[in-house]
Amino acid sequence: DPVAHDWWLYQIITGCGGLILQDPDPVLLYRQHGGNIIGANLSVSARMTRVFALLGGRFRRWNDTGLAALSASQHRFTPEARQAMAQFIQARSGRPWRRLAALRSSGVYRQSRLGNLALYVACLLGRL
Image (cartoon, rainbow, N blue to C red; front, side):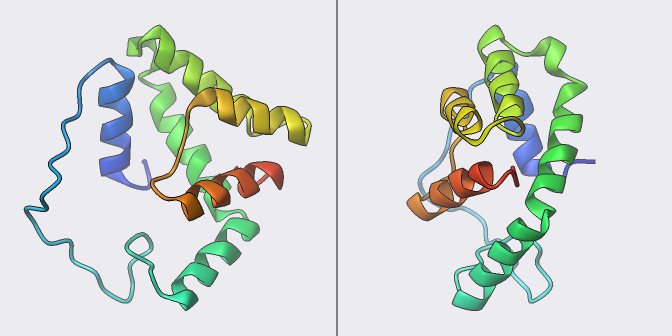
């Protein structure tokens, strides 16, 4: 099962060539609580917890799970989406500079500069 169902649906829809429309105005409240594994995580302690989780391999395990879930539908993906997925998979093994080049070629990104920095650090450290 994917770690985050909304992420997985987004990947499946866009991978198959579907269009995602994002409303810039929030229309529902997202329930945050102390036990959230994924969420806003804006505090310094929450960010440090995420850094240690990344270094400990949780991010990599989540990517393993996500890629396994996506693989079941990749035959439906557009050629561009299959190529992006292949590049992301290449970014997870091999020499550090080749991993970084594959990640860049994949087009995968996070929603903030800090998130993108963490993505590339994870790649460089072999934790993607």
